[in-house]
Length: 206
Ligand SMILES: NC(=O)c1ccc[n+]([C@@H]2O[C@H](COP(=O)([O-])OP(=O)(O)OC[C@H]3O[C@@H](n4cnc5c(N)ncnc54)[C@H](OP(=O)(O)O)[C@@H]3O)[C@@H](O)[C@H]2O)c1
Image (cartoon, rainbow, N blue to C red; front, side, top):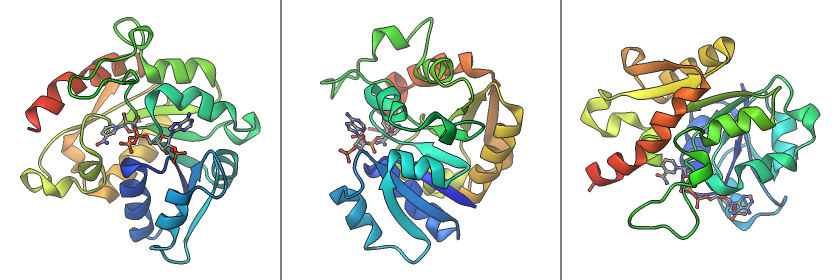
């Protein structure tokens, strides 16, 4: 499958590398076509990997992972021609962490409680099939769930789009998540819970 990964940080790299390993054709997208982190990643990959800007990556793939800083998700997608978003599946792994918060995370207040980052994405990009998943674990575990408890732990999924959930479920199983541990929470408003969960899991990790 042709899959794009928007984001060059550790999460984007874990996910993009795992997808390449699984045999998918993968384009890593960023703000510029010659992002140094994307170029460094590309140099470690085989022929089915490529890089481009956000618009190149979105146009390349039917399915893409969103792995940029939470505060910049909407502006990143605004650089994409809407035609390249229509009907596509966006797997949103981001969290709405406020800029400058480090040890104790603060979430962006406008994206919490009665709203969430994924809901805001779905409102802004109505033809995009937003599915929230994987944001409740460390980036390495997203792509390699077997590193904890032999892979026997839970991951969540939220979306208004049932057909997109089937695609995401299949990719999660390819990553190594067990079918019985993939919990479909329901529609996109259920993301309010999983985005807030960061307060708990970052403490449990230590
Ligand atoms: N790290 C984890 O274990 C973890 C776990 C769960 C969820 N998440 C979420 O996953 C996402 C990625 O996390 P991360 O740790 O890999 O890295 P990050 O530092 O949160 O984000 C790095 C990415 O954001 C991009 N970015 C920065 N400023 C931007 C802007 N103004 N416009 C567009 N893109 C911009 C960077 O692009 P450049 O290359 O151009 O700088 C880079 O691709 C975040 O939303 C995070 O909350 C992370």
